[in-house]
Image (cartoon, rainbow over all chains, first blue to last red; front, top):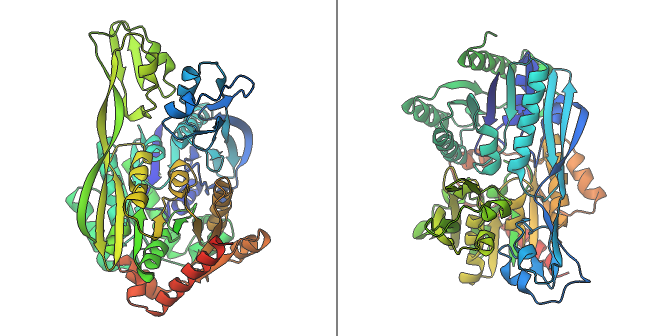
Length: 289
Length: 280
């Protein structure tokens, strides 16, 4: 079983658009949406959950006001500014437990809190693992790990040989959790100064974790000079650019219609470029198309 | 007044709005809290005047005093400590610096050392002071670097502060937006834009900070974002149409108010509108 993650560094470059199209072309594949704070893949793949799990995130401190003597020791010990006037602010509470152990009256306890939901689903193209973190809640990295573990269990059960992961923007904890141990990462970038800057940082991240990288340049015709800069940088660092996709308003139309572009308009230039890229990706993974 | 610019979905135009707004008002302090992938400095091109490392504390075990009792590892909620027979290991990147392990250690075997996880960089250009953070590659936790950048609110003593946020709806965004006076949520009129906006709205509401929406690339997609805002009484404070020139200027790192002066006035008007909403 192999795993590939689609990431970007910069947001809005087209990760989900491209992953959704890959999901329609893939066989024996479980798709995983690891952008757990703002998941969008389901809007194109329309999964129907057959199992829903509560995600227990960080614990939450609770003060028993009947036992509290307002000594403020907890407030002084809390490194996260989560206690004020003997009240716990759930937004800032990290569930570390320091307040519980410093309270002389044993008035504080830690409780589990449900911070989101994880889903195991089926869509018309195959199986899908996804999740939604409660707005504003923490620990997206832990939820990403749960989504990936669920995807692996599904893949083993259904005898799938590939897990296709839609990642999130950035380079922090949720992105690290979505690329750890995968066979291949595909970076979707765009020919803008920000796109190039962010692509370079995410390439360094992948190199840091020894994950092989491939690049796709989305909306490449928006700035051909920047596209050449990306190609030059990749060539210098021996990274293959396996796809160049035109900027085409038909992509927005397909999103509004709730369909991956290769399903919405299979013969358009963008769709042909994505199909070509998928073939190249499979061959890099040593799969036959 | 401190205005945060956030979104939910990535790539909707937060940095575009934050930078162009800062360049259109007087005497602005611009904070780039997207410390994983900071971009404001690419558009502002400041003369850098200071670089400061950002440190976190991690436990340092005095092995001569450690009895390998395992109390610290049992206490740690983040699996940052591992104790087995005669061995103790610290996983610094999992540590949240709560400093609880020292409290539970009965043998006084834990002290703290500092570890660098990123840097805070300051500079100035065109009357805009920029402070941005950069998380070291491979570090998972952005929040301490975001906190370091936000400290500039107190040290720089400026009145007009714009805070560029990371994308998403979870802790880095919450940390960025917390304590600001107003949040501008930048979205695009597409199904992804709408979906992520609804999540962002739910997250921001928990912070009790007033907010409004800016619709970028306002003429692509459909009208569902506008309908959502109307239904939920969320003010749409600006619409930026899809404009090839704006896109091209962005691609070469040029803020469009510098070349399209009519937009400078629009951003000034936006700032006045927000001032009016904050004083209500």
